[in-house]
Length: 55
Image (cartoon, rainbow, N blue to C red; front, side):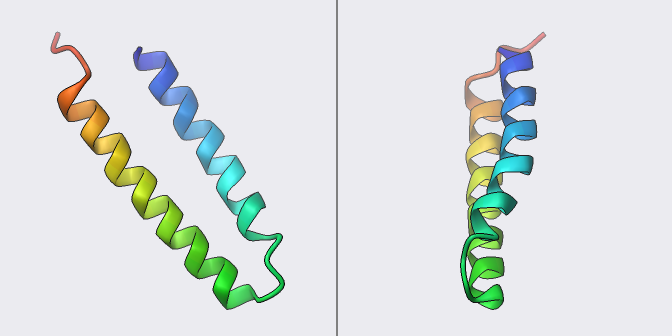
């Protein structure tokens, strides 16, 4: 489970900017990227807090 979470961070770190770069307007692409990364960070934090077993 932990390795899957770490792999998801790597994938999102590479994939999100590439999707945002396809936007014709640079400012709108940056806003989409920042909103998406913030959303993913909150989602990741919730998964770690509530679903990851404690060692």
